[in-house]
Length: 231
Image (cartoon, rainbow, N blue to C red; front, side):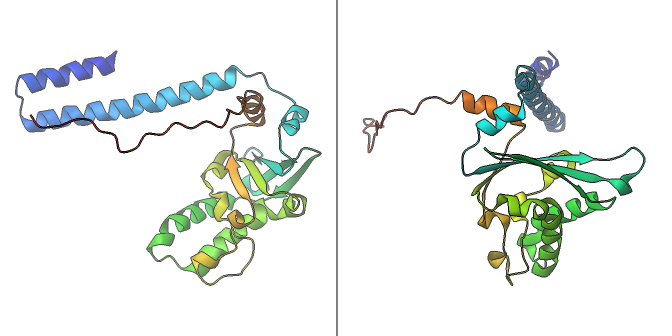
């Protein structure tokens, strides 16, 4: 493969004691290829895992949920050539029900997502709390508030985002105007334990393959002696 060729070329340059600038350039090219190869491998593995799973119905997905869990499935719906009519469909699945609603968000929603992401990154560098709260509250109102009443009985949220929603830290969405510092804000993470999944089908498959609990056994090693290290 080309990656092997690059390795051999770098070894050849090192043996030939090539100038450092040439060696440095070869190392950078090799590192870049290794990163790209690793990313491609992850994409292939994810695609393979999806292709090997036959889609399951909503009943099977609901059956795999715990009594304290709600699954939120988001779908961004954007009519061709008209982003002003963009909406987000939110499916709320629990063990006993399935409900679907649509929320109009309009053309500027993608900008709001990007602004929150930047605000979250900048929060450690003195970004104004009130401005962060405003952005996080606005996205809470669009993504969580429409289904807020349906989530009250539950303590765990499983979230399947879509498109730009993958870049949103749902834990950092803010449910109210309470709090004057970052540590006091009413984050969604204070109300729910939050996790993310790729799809309902993969969730159902993964849980169906759960291994039985192991017996309570423990093996520990402490303060080992490796012998003298004197030469």
